[in-house]
Amino acid sequence: MRPSLVSSALVAALVGFGGSGAVVLSAIQAVGATPVESASWLTALCLSMAGTSFWLSWRHRMPILAAWSTPGAALLGATAVGGATGPYDIQTAVGAFLAAGALILASGLLRPLSDAIARIPGAVAAAMLAGVLIAFPIAMFDAATADPLLILPLIGLYLVARLISTAWAVILVIGAAVAWAMALDRVAAIDGTLAVADLTLITPTFTVESLIGLALPLFLVSMASQNLPGFAVLRAAGYEPPARSALTVTGIASIVTAPFGAHTTTMAAITAALCTGPDTHPDPAQRWKSGLFYAFFYLVLAAVGVSLVSAFSALPASIVTTVAGLALLTPLMGALKAAMAPEETRFAATATLAATASGLTLLGVGSAFWGLALGLLVLGLEALARRLKG
Image 1 (tube, rainbow, N blue to C red):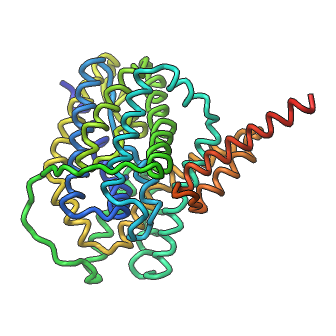
Image 2: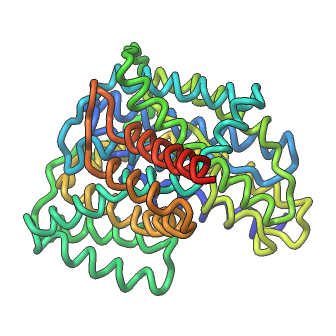
Image 3: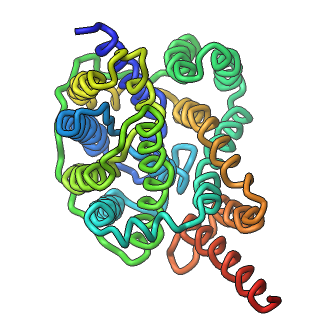
């Protein structure tokens, strides 16, 4: 066995967990989850990553890696960036997670649903994602305004570190943030014992507003921003992704883990690229084994989820805000590029971006839904105008 199968999986797990873990923590803060619920959320996510990655890689003999939905966490976290509590409580969020998982499962079982999602213009979907993501870098600079001594050095470190390695820059900033906060005596006292991972059942609450304003956008951004790119990564490496099987498995995993607080399980994209190339193994038929090691490392992360949440909770809220903002700068850049590139949909994408980023709430439904609806309305009106002129 080649050591690169293990090392590639380890790097993918560390980059996936460390690079966007702060975004998940921002979502946890937004719903006001208790420490026990927060630890359950993170533990359930890691278990889901492990189980789905192991099964899909073993079943299809491809390096198929799962990941939590970073855009989905950003969607929820954007309702209350900066450590505040948003309009959804943990019970309502869990209800939305269950609904989003059911939609992913349905898209794997029902081809018409997946085809309908595919027909949403990519530029409009990207603009909705950009409108969600942009709240985090803005909140990061708000934090820098309030506490420049703590935050500005971390931003400066990231700007230099990304020139060397974009994948590892955020992880480096996390380590530096802990050290810098300790040097400034900004870290609260924590229990030094290593807690055992635990799962806590959370009773879901379903409301029309949360199903439309949270569950549906969560499903859409997860499909457009992680599942579809994840399939593209596999195709680029010479594999034919089992799309319907992957959607079915991740949908089931999302439904099973949602009552424990976990939000959507999706295909990995950026981290998956670390395990699909020749650096992992020169023989493409052998690279699937990296998915098994990736699953093992997520089992290890699941075992220490309680301690990780406890450690992060001891840091200033502005640290989590800053790390999340830095982690989402590159996805924001990609979303903006995809949104604004096609000239024929540029106005609709701009309207979608503006409405989503505004935080507009109507009838209890959040801005992500209204941004998407506005973009589709603009496209519909433009199509109608062309027909009338013709």
